[in-house]
Length: 581
Image 1 (cartoon, rainbow, N blue to C red):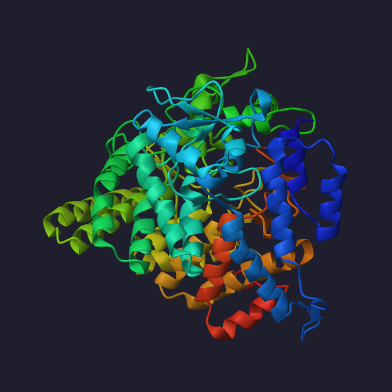
Image 2: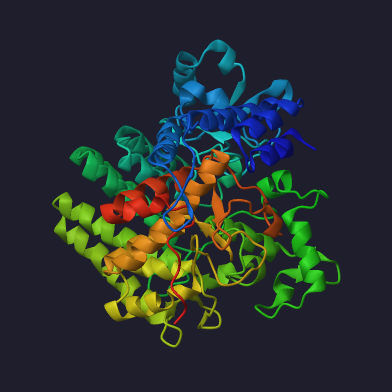
Protein backbone atom coordinates (compact mmCIF):
# COMPACT_ATOMS: atom_id res chain seq x y z
CA UNK A 1 0.00 0.00 0.00
CA UNK A 2 1.43 3.39 -0.93
CA UNK A 3 1.74 6.20 1.59
CA UNK A 4 -0.87 8.14 -0.39
CA UNK A 5 -3.39 5.31 -0.27
CA UNK A 6 -2.66 4.63 3.37
CA UNK A 7 -3.23 8.19 4.55
CA UNK A 8 -6.40 8.49 2.43
CA UNK A 9 -7.80 5.43 4.16
CA UNK A 10 -6.86 6.87 7.55
CA UNK A 11 -8.59 10.15 6.90
CA UNK A 12 -11.67 8.67 5.24
CA UNK A 13 -13.61 8.68 8.51
CA UNK A 14 -12.55 9.17 12.10
CA UNK A 15 -14.82 7.36 14.57
CA UNK A 16 -13.66 9.25 17.65
CA UNK A 17 -10.70 11.37 18.74
CA UNK A 18 -9.18 8.56 20.77
CA UNK A 19 -9.59 5.90 18.11
CA UNK A 20 -8.48 8.28 15.37
CA UNK A 21 -5.28 9.17 17.16
CA UNK A 22 -4.62 5.50 17.91
CA UNK A 23 -5.03 4.68 14.26
CA UNK A 24 -2.65 7.48 13.29
CA UNK A 25 0.06 6.50 15.77
CA UNK A 26 -0.19 2.81 14.88
CA UNK A 27 0.49 3.60 11.25
CA UNK A 28 4.23 3.85 11.46
CA UNK A 29 5.10 4.01 7.78
CA UNK A 30 3.66 7.44 6.99
CA UNK A 31 5.39 9.28 4.19
CA UNK A 32 6.13 12.98 4.42
CA UNK A 33 3.45 13.54 1.82
CA UNK A 34 0.94 12.51 4.48
CA UNK A 35 2.11 14.94 7.13
CA UNK A 36 0.01 17.96 6.16
CA UNK A 37 -3.25 16.04 6.10
CA UNK A 38 -2.30 14.18 9.27
CA UNK A 39 -1.75 17.48 11.05
CA UNK A 40 -5.02 18.78 9.60
CA UNK A 41 -6.96 15.80 10.91
CA UNK A 42 -5.49 15.97 14.39
CA UNK A 43 -5.76 19.77 14.62
CA UNK A 44 -9.38 19.84 13.54
CA UNK A 45 -10.33 17.05 15.92
CA UNK A 46 -8.58 18.65 18.87
CA UNK A 47 -10.01 22.09 18.10
CA UNK A 48 -13.46 20.56 18.29
CA UNK A 49 -13.06 18.72 21.59
CA UNK A 50 -16.30 18.95 23.47
CA UNK A 51 -16.52 20.60 26.88
CA UNK A 52 -16.47 18.25 29.86
CA UNK A 53 -19.89 16.85 30.57
CA UNK A 54 -21.33 17.89 27.20
CA UNK A 55 -23.31 14.77 26.42
CA UNK A 56 -26.34 14.24 24.24
CA UNK A 57 -29.60 14.29 26.18
CA UNK A 58 -32.95 12.70 25.58
CA UNK A 59 -35.42 14.89 23.70
CA UNK A 60 -38.96 15.48 24.75
CA UNK A 61 -40.19 12.73 22.43
CA UNK A 62 -37.48 10.30 23.50
CA UNK A 63 -35.16 11.06 20.58
CA UNK A 64 -31.55 12.09 21.02
CA UNK A 65 -30.96 15.78 21.48
CA UNK A 66 -27.72 17.72 21.35
CA UNK A 67 -26.75 20.38 23.82
CA UNK A 68 -26.03 24.00 23.00
CA UNK A 69 -22.42 23.31 24.01
CA UNK A 70 -22.13 20.66 21.31
CA UNK A 71 -23.52 23.03 18.71
CA UNK A 72 -21.00 25.64 19.80
CA UNK A 73 -18.24 23.03 19.48
CA UNK A 74 -19.27 22.38 15.87
CA UNK A 75 -19.21 26.11 15.15
CA UNK A 76 -15.81 26.40 16.81
CA UNK A 77 -14.53 23.54 14.65
CA UNK A 78 -15.72 25.36 11.53
CA UNK A 79 -14.31 28.72 12.58
CA UNK A 80 -10.94 27.16 13.38
CA UNK A 81 -11.12 25.21 10.13
CA UNK A 82 -10.93 28.31 7.96
CA UNK A 83 -7.40 28.86 9.25
CA UNK A 84 -6.41 25.20 9.48
CA UNK A 85 -7.45 24.69 5.86
CA UNK A 86 -5.83 27.93 4.67
CA UNK A 87 -2.69 27.80 2.54
CA UNK A 88 -0.32 30.64 1.72
CA UNK A 89 3.14 31.05 0.26
CA UNK A 90 4.57 31.21 3.76
CA UNK A 91 3.63 27.54 4.02
CA UNK A 92 4.34 26.70 0.38
CA UNK A 93 6.29 23.56 1.26
CA UNK A 94 3.15 22.21 2.96
CA UNK A 95 0.81 23.48 0.27
CA UNK A 96 2.91 21.75 -2.39
CA UNK A 97 2.31 18.34 -0.82
CA UNK A 98 -0.05 16.30 -2.99
CA UNK A 99 -1.44 13.16 -1.32
CA UNK A 100 -2.44 11.92 -4.77
CA UNK A 101 1.15 11.70 -6.05
CA UNK A 102 4.54 10.72 -4.57
CA UNK A 103 7.27 13.36 -4.13
CA UNK A 104 10.40 13.74 -6.22
CA UNK A 105 13.77 12.43 -5.08
CA UNK A 106 14.78 13.91 -1.76
CA UNK A 107 11.12 14.28 -0.81
CA UNK A 108 10.88 17.53 -2.77
CA UNK A 109 7.77 18.86 -4.47
CA UNK A 110 7.63 20.77 -7.78
CA UNK A 111 5.95 24.19 -7.89
CA UNK A 112 5.29 25.65 -11.33
CA UNK A 113 5.19 29.33 -12.27
CA UNK A 114 3.08 30.49 -15.22
CA UNK A 115 5.06 31.23 -18.40
CA UNK A 116 3.53 34.72 -18.47
CA UNK A 117 4.74 35.49 -14.94
CA UNK A 118 8.05 37.11 -13.94
CA UNK A 119 9.86 33.99 -12.75
CA UNK A 120 12.76 35.82 -11.11
CA UNK A 121 10.41 38.10 -9.17
CA UNK A 122 8.36 35.14 -7.93
CA UNK A 123 11.48 33.25 -6.87
CA UNK A 124 12.82 36.29 -5.03
CA UNK A 125 9.50 36.81 -3.26
CA UNK A 126 9.30 33.16 -2.20
CA UNK A 127 12.87 33.12 -0.92
CA UNK A 128 12.04 36.14 1.22
CA UNK A 129 8.85 34.57 2.61
CA UNK A 130 10.00 30.99 3.14
CA UNK A 131 12.55 29.71 5.64
CA UNK A 132 15.57 28.29 3.80
CA UNK A 133 14.78 24.74 4.87
CA UNK A 134 11.24 25.03 3.49
CA UNK A 135 12.43 26.55 0.22
CA UNK A 136 14.76 23.58 -0.15
CA UNK A 137 11.72 21.26 -0.01
CA UNK A 138 10.28 22.66 -3.25
CA UNK A 139 11.58 22.71 -6.81
CA UNK A 140 10.55 25.93 -8.53
CA UNK A 141 9.99 25.51 -12.26
CA UNK A 142 8.61 27.52 -15.14
CA UNK A 143 5.49 25.97 -16.65
CA UNK A 144 6.02 25.11 -20.34
CA UNK A 145 4.61 27.67 -22.74
CA UNK A 146 2.21 25.06 -24.08
CA UNK A 147 0.42 25.24 -20.73
CA UNK A 148 -0.42 21.53 -20.82
CA UNK A 149 0.04 18.75 -18.31
CA UNK A 150 3.57 18.11 -17.10
CA UNK A 151 5.45 14.83 -16.76
CA UNK A 152 5.99 15.50 -13.06
CA UNK A 153 2.76 16.80 -11.52
CA UNK A 154 3.07 19.80 -9.26
CA UNK A 155 1.42 22.77 -7.62
CA UNK A 156 0.65 25.87 -9.68
CA UNK A 157 1.81 29.10 -8.06
CA UNK A 158 -0.85 31.51 -6.80
CA UNK A 159 0.04 34.85 -5.20
CA UNK A 160 -2.62 35.00 -2.45
CA UNK A 161 -3.75 32.79 0.44
CA UNK A 162 -6.57 30.33 -0.19
CA UNK A 163 -8.63 27.65 1.54
CA UNK A 164 -8.47 24.00 0.52
CA UNK A 165 -11.38 21.56 0.95
CA UNK A 166 -9.49 19.13 3.22
CA UNK A 167 -8.30 15.52 3.29
CA UNK A 168 -6.74 14.41 0.01
CA UNK A 169 -7.74 17.72 -1.59
CA UNK A 170 -4.81 19.97 -0.68
CA UNK A 171 -5.25 22.59 -3.40
CA UNK A 172 -7.64 25.43 -4.33
CA UNK A 173 -10.64 24.06 -6.20
CA UNK A 174 -12.95 25.86 -8.60
CA UNK A 175 -16.54 25.41 -7.49
CA UNK A 176 -15.61 24.41 -3.94
CA UNK A 177 -14.21 27.89 -3.52
CA UNK A 178 -17.57 29.57 -4.15
CA UNK A 179 -19.21 27.66 -1.31
CA UNK A 180 -16.16 28.14 0.90
CA UNK A 181 -16.40 31.89 0.28
CA UNK A 182 -20.04 31.87 1.39
CA UNK A 183 -18.86 30.45 4.70
CA UNK A 184 -15.89 32.78 4.98
CA UNK A 185 -18.08 35.83 4.49
CA UNK A 186 -20.68 34.53 6.94
CA UNK A 187 -17.89 34.12 9.52
CA UNK A 188 -16.38 37.55 8.88
CA UNK A 189 -13.28 36.33 7.00
CA UNK A 190 -13.67 39.02 4.33
CA UNK A 191 -10.00 39.50 3.47
CA UNK A 192 -9.46 35.77 2.95
CA UNK A 193 -12.59 35.63 0.79
CA UNK A 194 -11.23 38.47 -1.36
CA UNK A 195 -7.89 36.66 -1.61
CA UNK A 196 -9.76 33.69 -3.04
CA UNK A 197 -11.34 35.87 -5.73
CA UNK A 198 -8.01 37.53 -6.48
CA UNK A 199 -6.47 34.10 -7.03
CA UNK A 200 -9.20 33.32 -9.55
CA UNK A 201 -8.50 36.60 -11.32
CA UNK A 202 -4.81 35.60 -11.41
CA UNK A 203 -5.69 32.16 -12.79
CA UNK A 204 -7.70 33.65 -15.64
CA UNK A 205 -4.94 36.14 -16.44
CA UNK A 206 -2.08 33.63 -16.32
CA UNK A 207 -3.59 30.16 -16.86
CA UNK A 208 -6.45 31.16 -19.18
CA UNK A 209 -9.37 30.16 -16.96
CA UNK A 210 -10.39 29.25 -13.45
CA UNK A 211 -8.85 25.83 -12.99
CA UNK A 212 -10.40 22.65 -11.68
CA UNK A 213 -7.66 23.16 -9.07
CA UNK A 214 -4.15 24.58 -8.99
CA UNK A 215 -2.25 21.43 -9.94
CA UNK A 216 -0.67 20.86 -13.34
CA UNK A 217 -2.91 17.89 -14.13
CA UNK A 218 -5.94 20.21 -13.89
CA UNK A 219 -4.71 22.69 -16.51
CA UNK A 220 -6.97 21.31 -19.23
CA UNK A 221 -10.31 22.04 -17.56
CA UNK A 222 -12.27 24.40 -15.37
CA UNK A 223 -15.20 23.77 -13.02
CA UNK A 224 -18.75 25.17 -12.69
CA UNK A 225 -18.51 28.98 -12.99
CA UNK A 226 -19.48 30.88 -9.84
CA UNK A 227 -16.96 33.71 -10.35
CA UNK A 228 -19.31 36.68 -10.68
CA UNK A 229 -21.35 35.66 -7.67
CA UNK A 230 -18.12 35.49 -5.65
CA UNK A 231 -17.11 38.95 -6.89
CA UNK A 232 -20.44 40.53 -5.95
CA UNK A 233 -20.52 38.79 -2.56
CA UNK A 234 -17.08 40.16 -1.70
CA UNK A 235 -17.92 43.61 -3.09
CA UNK A 236 -21.02 43.87 -0.89
CA UNK A 237 -18.89 43.18 2.17
CA UNK A 238 -15.95 45.34 1.09
CA UNK A 239 -16.92 47.93 -1.56
CA UNK A 240 -13.94 48.88 -3.73
CA UNK A 241 -14.81 50.39 -7.09
CA UNK A 242 -11.28 50.13 -8.50
CA UNK A 243 -11.16 46.43 -7.57
CA UNK A 244 -14.58 45.83 -9.13
CA UNK A 245 -13.46 47.60 -12.33
CA UNK A 246 -10.46 45.29 -12.53
CA UNK A 247 -12.69 42.21 -12.57
CA UNK A 248 -14.53 43.12 -15.79
CA UNK A 249 -11.85 42.06 -18.35
CA UNK A 250 -11.31 38.71 -16.64
CA UNK A 251 -15.06 38.08 -16.44
CA UNK A 252 -15.30 38.66 -20.19
CA UNK A 253 -12.33 36.38 -20.85
CA UNK A 254 -13.71 33.61 -18.64
CA UNK A 255 -17.18 33.88 -20.16
CA UNK A 256 -15.65 33.30 -23.59
CA UNK A 257 -14.09 30.07 -22.27
CA UNK A 258 -17.63 28.75 -21.88
CA UNK A 259 -19.32 30.59 -24.76
CA UNK A 260 -16.84 29.59 -27.49
CA UNK A 261 -15.99 26.20 -28.98
CA UNK A 262 -15.49 23.51 -27.89
CA UNK A 263 -17.80 24.29 -24.97
CA UNK A 264 -20.59 25.60 -27.16
CA UNK A 265 -22.13 24.23 -30.32
CA UNK A 266 -23.90 27.50 -31.08
CA UNK A 267 -27.40 27.02 -29.64
CA UNK A 268 -28.71 30.11 -27.82
CA UNK A 269 -25.39 30.64 -26.09
CA UNK A 270 -25.66 27.28 -24.30
CA UNK A 271 -22.60 25.38 -23.18
CA UNK A 272 -21.40 21.91 -22.26
CA UNK A 273 -18.60 20.57 -20.11
CA UNK A 274 -15.53 19.71 -22.18
CA UNK A 275 -11.95 18.96 -21.11
CA UNK A 276 -9.22 19.91 -23.56
CA UNK A 277 -6.97 17.04 -22.48
CA UNK A 278 -6.66 13.51 -23.81
CA UNK A 279 -6.29 10.09 -22.24
CA UNK A 280 -6.65 9.01 -18.64
CA UNK A 281 -7.02 11.54 -15.84
CA UNK A 282 -3.63 11.25 -14.08
CA UNK A 283 -5.01 11.64 -10.57
CA UNK A 284 -7.40 8.72 -11.12
CA UNK A 285 -4.78 6.13 -12.02
CA UNK A 286 -2.40 7.47 -9.36
CA UNK A 287 -4.63 7.63 -6.29
CA UNK A 288 -8.05 6.08 -6.84
CA UNK A 289 -7.59 2.32 -6.49
CA UNK A 290 -9.63 -0.22 -4.59
CA UNK A 291 -8.27 -2.92 -2.28
CA UNK A 292 -7.47 -5.14 -5.25
CA UNK A 293 -5.52 -2.33 -6.89
CA UNK A 294 -8.14 -1.70 -9.57
CA UNK A 295 -8.59 1.83 -10.87
CA UNK A 296 -11.90 3.45 -11.70
CA UNK A 297 -11.21 2.63 -15.35
CA UNK A 298 -10.70 -1.06 -14.58
CA UNK A 299 -14.09 -1.09 -12.82
CA UNK A 300 -15.73 0.67 -15.76
CA UNK A 301 -14.42 -1.95 -18.19
CA UNK A 302 -15.65 -4.73 -15.92
CA UNK A 303 -19.09 -3.12 -15.85
CA UNK A 304 -19.22 -2.78 -19.62
CA UNK A 305 -18.21 -6.42 -20.04
CA UNK A 306 -21.09 -7.66 -17.89
CA UNK A 307 -23.92 -5.16 -18.40
CA UNK A 308 -26.11 -4.11 -21.27
CA UNK A 309 -26.02 -0.34 -21.74
CA UNK A 310 -28.96 1.28 -23.50
CA UNK A 311 -28.44 4.89 -22.34
CA UNK A 312 -26.06 5.63 -25.21
CA UNK A 313 -24.20 3.99 -28.06
CA UNK A 314 -21.64 2.00 -26.11
CA UNK A 315 -19.39 1.49 -29.13
CA UNK A 316 -18.40 5.16 -28.85
CA UNK A 317 -16.84 4.53 -25.47
CA UNK A 318 -15.89 0.86 -25.27
CA UNK A 319 -14.22 -1.53 -27.72
CA UNK A 320 -15.63 -4.90 -26.66
CA UNK A 321 -13.35 -6.93 -28.92
CA UNK A 322 -10.24 -5.44 -27.32
CA UNK A 323 -11.81 -4.83 -23.90
CA UNK A 324 -10.59 -1.24 -24.09
CA UNK A 325 -12.07 2.12 -23.28
CA UNK A 326 -11.93 4.42 -26.29
CA UNK A 327 -10.26 7.83 -26.49
CA UNK A 328 -13.75 9.38 -26.52
CA UNK A 329 -14.52 7.70 -23.19
CA UNK A 330 -11.48 9.36 -21.62
CA UNK A 331 -12.47 12.69 -23.14
CA UNK A 332 -15.91 12.31 -21.56
CA UNK A 333 -14.48 11.12 -18.27
CA UNK A 334 -12.29 14.21 -18.06
CA UNK A 335 -15.24 16.41 -19.04
CA UNK A 336 -17.33 14.84 -16.28
CA UNK A 337 -14.65 16.02 -13.86
CA UNK A 338 -15.03 19.56 -15.15
CA UNK A 339 -18.68 19.33 -14.08
CA UNK A 340 -17.71 18.45 -10.50
CA UNK A 341 -20.26 15.59 -10.48
CA UNK A 342 -17.82 12.71 -10.70
CA UNK A 343 -19.10 10.11 -11.06
CA UNK A 344 -22.82 9.43 -11.43
CA UNK A 345 -25.18 7.99 -14.05
CA UNK A 346 -26.75 11.36 -14.81
CA UNK A 347 -25.49 11.27 -18.41
CA UNK A 348 -25.66 7.49 -18.66
CA UNK A 349 -23.39 5.05 -16.81
CA UNK A 350 -20.25 6.86 -15.60
CA UNK A 351 -21.51 10.07 -17.23
CA UNK A 352 -19.85 8.86 -20.41
CA UNK A 353 -22.24 10.78 -22.69
CA UNK A 354 -21.78 14.15 -20.95
CA UNK A 355 -20.10 15.83 -23.93
CA UNK A 356 -23.38 15.55 -25.87
CA UNK A 357 -25.45 17.46 -23.32
CA UNK A 358 -26.23 21.02 -22.33
CA UNK A 359 -26.42 20.57 -18.54
CA UNK A 360 -29.07 22.52 -16.67
CA UNK A 361 -26.61 23.40 -13.90
CA UNK A 362 -23.93 24.87 -16.17
CA UNK A 363 -26.37 26.92 -18.23
CA UNK A 364 -28.16 28.22 -15.16
CA UNK A 365 -24.76 29.39 -13.92
CA UNK A 366 -24.03 31.10 -17.24
CA UNK A 367 -27.35 32.91 -16.89
CA UNK A 368 -26.29 34.04 -13.41
CA UNK A 369 -22.90 35.06 -14.76
CA UNK A 370 -24.48 37.23 -17.45
CA UNK A 371 -26.94 38.82 -15.04
CA UNK A 372 -24.25 39.44 -12.42
CA UNK A 373 -21.97 41.02 -15.02
CA UNK A 374 -24.77 43.37 -16.05
CA UNK A 375 -25.17 44.35 -12.40
CA UNK A 376 -21.42 44.95 -12.06
CA UNK A 377 -21.40 47.14 -15.17
CA UNK A 378 -24.37 49.16 -13.94
CA UNK A 379 -22.58 49.68 -10.63
CA UNK A 380 -19.61 50.99 -12.65
CA UNK A 381 -21.81 53.38 -14.60
CA UNK A 382 -21.79 51.45 -17.90
CA UNK A 383 -25.49 50.83 -18.70
CA UNK A 384 -24.96 50.26 -22.44
CA UNK A 385 -22.45 47.49 -21.80
CA UNK A 386 -24.76 46.09 -19.14
CA UNK A 387 -27.57 45.81 -21.71
CA UNK A 388 -25.49 43.42 -23.81
CA UNK A 389 -25.12 41.09 -20.85
CA UNK A 390 -28.82 41.36 -20.01
CA UNK A 391 -29.60 40.24 -23.55
CA UNK A 392 -27.29 37.24 -23.16
CA UNK A 393 -28.98 36.32 -19.90
CA UNK A 394 -32.44 36.59 -21.44
CA UNK A 395 -31.43 34.36 -24.36
CA UNK A 396 -30.10 31.66 -22.04
CA UNK A 397 -33.21 31.84 -19.87
CA UNK A 398 -35.94 31.89 -22.50
CA UNK A 399 -34.44 30.10 -25.49
CA UNK A 400 -32.20 27.76 -23.57
CA UNK A 401 -33.08 26.60 -20.08
CA UNK A 402 -36.86 27.14 -20.09
CA UNK A 403 -37.41 26.06 -23.70
CA UNK A 404 -35.06 23.09 -23.95
CA UNK A 405 -34.52 21.84 -20.40
CA UNK A 406 -37.95 22.19 -18.79
CA UNK A 407 -40.04 19.01 -18.95
CA UNK A 408 -43.72 19.84 -18.64
CA UNK A 409 -44.74 16.21 -18.25
CA UNK A 410 -42.53 15.53 -15.22
CA UNK A 411 -42.44 19.03 -13.77
CA UNK A 412 -38.64 18.97 -13.53
CA UNK A 413 -35.64 20.54 -15.23
CA UNK A 414 -33.41 18.03 -17.02
CA UNK A 415 -30.24 18.07 -19.10
CA UNK A 416 -30.68 18.48 -22.87
CA UNK A 417 -29.05 16.12 -25.35
CA UNK A 418 -28.28 18.26 -28.39
CA UNK A 419 -27.69 15.18 -30.58
CA UNK A 420 -31.04 13.53 -29.92
CA UNK A 421 -32.73 16.91 -29.33
CA UNK A 422 -34.43 15.63 -26.18
CA UNK A 423 -34.04 15.82 -22.42
CA UNK A 424 -32.76 12.85 -20.47
CA UNK A 425 -35.40 12.04 -17.86
CA UNK A 426 -33.04 11.37 -14.98
CA UNK A 427 -34.26 13.18 -11.84
CA UNK A 428 -31.23 14.97 -10.40
CA UNK A 429 -30.81 17.61 -7.72
CA UNK A 430 -29.62 20.13 -10.31
CA UNK A 431 -33.32 20.61 -11.11
CA UNK A 432 -33.16 23.25 -8.33
CA UNK A 433 -30.52 25.36 -10.11
CA UNK A 434 -33.09 27.31 -12.18
CA UNK A 435 -34.87 28.19 -8.93
CA UNK A 436 -31.62 29.34 -7.32
CA UNK A 437 -30.82 31.38 -10.44
CA UNK A 438 -34.30 32.90 -10.75
CA UNK A 439 -34.93 31.34 -14.17
CA UNK A 440 -38.06 29.36 -13.27
CA UNK A 441 -41.52 30.89 -13.47
CA UNK A 442 -43.63 30.66 -10.29
CA UNK A 443 -45.60 27.87 -11.95
CA UNK A 444 -42.46 25.92 -12.81
CA UNK A 445 -41.11 26.37 -9.29
CA UNK A 446 -44.38 25.01 -7.89
CA UNK A 447 -44.10 21.91 -10.08
CA UNK A 448 -40.52 21.30 -8.92
CA UNK A 449 -41.57 21.68 -5.28
CA UNK A 450 -44.38 19.19 -5.86
CA UNK A 451 -41.63 16.70 -6.76
CA UNK A 452 -39.61 17.25 -3.59
CA UNK A 453 -40.55 13.75 -2.46
CA UNK A 454 -38.26 12.36 -5.17
CA UNK A 455 -35.23 13.84 -3.44
CA UNK A 456 -36.15 14.56 0.17
CA UNK A 457 -34.93 12.06 2.72
CA UNK A 458 -34.47 12.05 6.48
CA UNK A 459 -31.07 13.76 6.21
CA UNK A 460 -31.78 16.27 3.46
CA UNK A 461 -31.83 15.98 -0.33
CA UNK A 462 -30.35 12.99 -2.10
CA UNK A 463 -28.56 13.75 -5.34
CA UNK A 464 -30.70 11.58 -7.61
CA UNK A 465 -33.33 8.86 -7.45
CA UNK A 466 -31.01 6.13 -8.73
CA UNK A 467 -28.62 4.02 -6.62
CA UNK A 468 -25.83 3.47 -9.15
CA UNK A 469 -22.96 2.86 -6.75
CA UNK A 470 -21.50 6.29 -7.57
CA UNK A 471 -21.10 9.07 -5.02
CA UNK A 472 -23.15 11.63 -6.98
CA UNK A 473 -26.27 9.47 -7.00
CA UNK A 474 -28.68 8.17 -4.36
CA UNK A 475 -28.57 7.82 -1.41
CA UNK A 476 -25.84 10.44 -1.00
CA UNK A 477 -26.40 14.09 -0.20
CA UNK A 478 -23.88 16.89 -0.61
CA UNK A 479 -23.76 20.18 1.27
CA UNK A 480 -23.56 22.49 -1.78
CA UNK A 481 -26.67 20.93 -3.28
CA UNK A 482 -28.57 21.47 -0.03
CA UNK A 483 -27.55 25.13 -0.13
CA UNK A 484 -28.47 25.64 -3.79
CA UNK A 485 -31.85 23.95 -3.34
CA UNK A 486 -32.73 25.68 -0.07
CA UNK A 487 -31.85 29.12 -1.43
CA UNK A 488 -33.85 28.37 -4.55
CA UNK A 489 -36.86 27.36 -2.46
CA UNK A 490 -36.62 30.52 -0.37
CA UNK A 491 -36.40 32.65 -3.50
CA UNK A 492 -39.85 31.44 -4.53
CA UNK A 493 -41.38 31.65 -1.06
CA UNK A 494 -41.23 28.00 0.01
CA UNK A 495 -39.96 28.76 3.49
CA UNK A 496 -41.47 25.74 5.24
CA UNK A 497 -39.82 23.30 2.85
CA UNK A 498 -36.51 25.19 2.98
CA UNK A 499 -36.53 25.16 6.79
CA UNK A 500 -37.31 21.45 6.98
CA UNK A 501 -34.54 20.45 4.56
CA UNK A 502 -32.08 22.72 6.39
CA UNK A 503 -32.97 21.30 9.81
CA UNK A 504 -32.70 17.72 8.59
CA UNK A 505 -29.30 18.24 6.97
CA UNK A 506 -27.87 20.38 9.77
CA UNK A 507 -28.97 17.93 12.45
CA UNK A 508 -27.35 15.11 10.46
CA UNK A 509 -24.05 16.98 10.22
CA UNK A 510 -24.23 17.85 13.92
CA UNK A 511 -25.05 14.28 14.89
CA UNK A 512 -22.09 12.88 12.97
CA UNK A 513 -19.84 15.64 14.29
CA UNK A 514 -20.72 14.72 17.87
CA UNK A 515 -20.04 11.06 17.17
CA UNK A 516 -16.84 11.45 15.15
CA UNK A 517 -15.53 14.96 15.99
CA UNK A 518 -15.20 15.90 12.36
CA UNK A 519 -17.21 17.23 9.42
CA UNK A 520 -16.96 15.39 6.13
CA UNK A 521 -17.46 15.78 2.39
CA UNK A 522 -20.76 13.91 1.89
CA UNK A 523 -23.44 11.97 3.77
CA UNK A 524 -25.90 9.14 3.29
CA UNK A 525 -29.09 11.14 3.74
CA UNK A 526 -31.29 8.04 3.87
CA UNK A 527 -29.58 6.40 6.85
CA UNK A 528 -28.40 9.76 8.25
CA UNK A 529 -24.81 8.56 8.47
CA UNK A 530 -21.37 9.60 7.22
CA UNK A 531 -20.19 5.99 6.78
CA UNK A 532 -20.59 5.67 3.04
CA UNK A 533 -17.79 3.41 1.79
CA UNK A 534 -19.75 0.15 1.64
CA UNK A 535 -22.21 1.52 -0.90
CA UNK A 536 -19.66 3.07 -3.24
CA UNK A 537 -18.52 0.97 -6.19
CA UNK A 538 -16.96 3.55 -8.51
CA UNK A 539 -14.62 6.53 -8.11
CA UNK A 540 -12.78 7.11 -4.85
CA UNK A 541 -14.36 5.46 -1.82
CA UNK A 542 -13.19 7.73 1.00
CA UNK A 543 -15.20 10.41 2.80
CA UNK A 544 -12.77 13.27 3.18
CA UNK A 545 -12.56 15.31 6.36
CA UNK A 546 -12.41 19.06 6.74
CA UNK A 547 -14.56 19.86 4.91
CA UNK A 548 -14.72 23.27 3.25
CA UNK A 549 -18.09 23.33 1.54
CA UNK A 550 -19.85 21.36 4.26
CA UNK A 551 -18.56 23.81 6.86
CA UNK A 552 -19.79 26.70 4.71
CA UNK A 553 -23.22 25.21 4.10
CA UNK A 554 -23.60 24.54 7.82
CA UNK A 555 -23.05 28.15 8.87
CA UNK A 556 -25.08 29.59 5.99
CA UNK A 557 -28.06 27.26 6.31
CA UNK A 558 -28.12 27.79 10.06
CA UNK A 559 -27.94 31.57 9.72
CA UNK A 560 -30.90 31.56 7.30
CA UNK A 561 -33.15 29.64 9.71
CA UNK A 562 -35.68 31.63 11.73
CA UNK A 563 -34.93 31.64 15.45
CA UNK A 564 -37.92 29.38 16.06
CA UNK A 565 -36.43 26.73 13.75
CA UNK A 566 -32.85 26.77 15.03
CA UNK A 567 -33.69 24.83 18.18
CA UNK A 568 -34.84 21.94 15.98
CA UNK A 569 -31.27 21.45 14.75
CA UNK A 570 -30.45 20.06 18.20
CA UNK A 571 -32.84 17.17 17.58
CA UNK A 572 -30.36 14.61 16.32
CA UNK A 573 -33.07 12.52 14.69
CA UNK A 574 -34.12 15.42 12.48
CA UNK A 575 -37.49 17.00 11.80
CA UNK A 576 -38.93 14.17 9.72
CA UNK A 577 -40.14 14.07 6.13
CA UNK A 578 -43.77 14.39 4.99
CA UNK A 579 -45.49 11.32 3.62
CA UNK A 580 -45.52 11.14 -0.16
CA UNK A 581 -48.67 12.60 -1.63
